[in-house]
Image 1 (cartoon, helix red, strand yellow):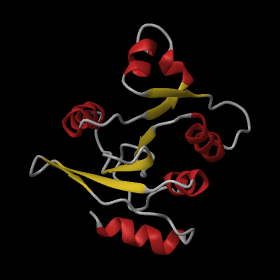
Image 2 (cartoon, one colour):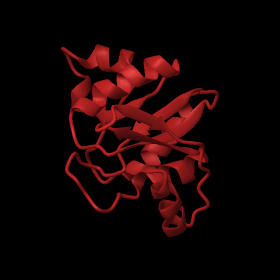
Image 3 (cartoon, one colour):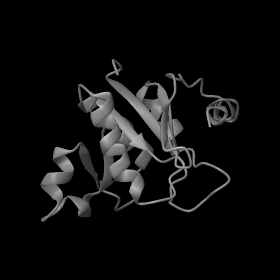
Image 4 (cartoon, one colour):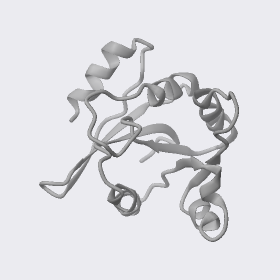
Length: 146
């Protein structure tokens, strides 16, 4: 993957297995991918491991705007391919949350859709999608990938 900065949306996020499948996938595509997690995950005994595999801690306390805080991470890093689950949960949902989209808009980076097809044991990686700031229209286009 030649793109150095992007938001990677991974769908569906319905299992804790998604994490290690994502780690295996990035080793196959030979491209570092990153994730964010609550800062408490980055304490001993797993903190150093999570950072080593591409994790960045996020302070979720207070009245911070999380979208803006995450978008700023793109400015601080030379290379940052942020993998997120647009559903925001591991439960089956009918509508995605919009945070991933606005992070990409604020950071001025493309969105790359990735789909886990567990029934066929396939990971499908889509083309770069550059958001237009028209969330409703763009979301429909992104969901066509699935």
